[in-house]
Length: 179
Image 1 (cartoon, rainbow, N blue to C red):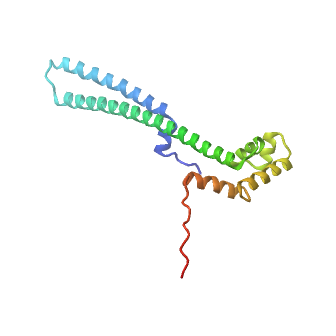
Image 2 (cartoon, helix red, strand yellow):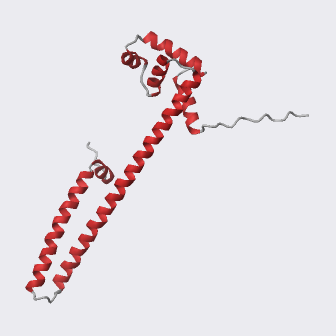
Image 3 (cartoon, rainbow, N blue to C red):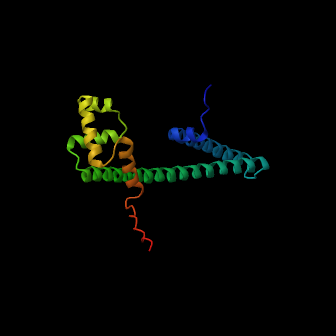
């Protein structure tokens, strides 16, 4: 069973397709405009109902093309803003993670292993990427968990995510004791 692509998927996957369609529409608009002008000359400047309908259709096509061009410009500007925001957010997330690594006092090797861990790599994959044995990676992980006050990957990721969601957790105020 094949999945039919949605309109949003088609448009987002191929902005070049939209540009090609606008170019084709522009060529058609030029053709229709030339045809309207030629027909107008043939009738001696006296517009007929058919000629007025062609002129309105041609004008509408030109307006649609201008609207599409403006829409594409706005979408491209929005995309650029979103990409800048994403870049800034990525940098901020990286900074928060690095500050935790500093706070935890991780060694350069432990930082490297912790970075791979945050990215979701398995112990085997981390060992291959670093050129270490799995036992060495496990030793680094034990040190990372000990220094971070966590017991496993899930707890460590939870600590990092919690700090991203609420960078200034509220401390609980002690409740007064009953008399």
